[in-house]
Image (tube, rainbow, N blue to C red):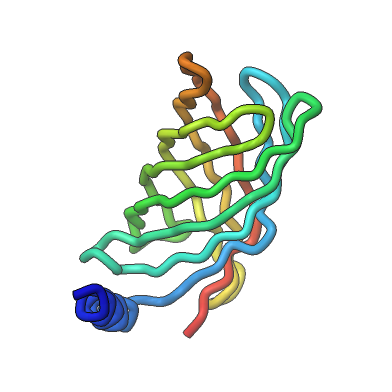
Length: 152
């Protein structure tokens, strides 16, 4: 049963990935402004039009916040508002962060993609995040920026 389910997932993803371009955000910078200063770098990959007009994006990152080092994993769903230059996009997702404590993130994304060439863009993204850690919650506002490379 597991093999059949695995083959079904591979078949669905193979067909879905044929619908849109793959993209990668290599070493994007993240500057946390509220509540404390922090700096991180992440690497993510995604695919356009994976769920109809929606793109999926997932990745990992490493950051320094308040003197401690954190590792994070995350996944987002994005909706690109194509047709104008620059391109705007909206979305949201989930994340898991480990370091001094383990945290669960519920985040949004509002971004702007500036085209440089057909396959190379620069993005700027505002990420409001609600972080749940140690029985409490925090609101965090991040500004993320970096290159986005398209494949195919």
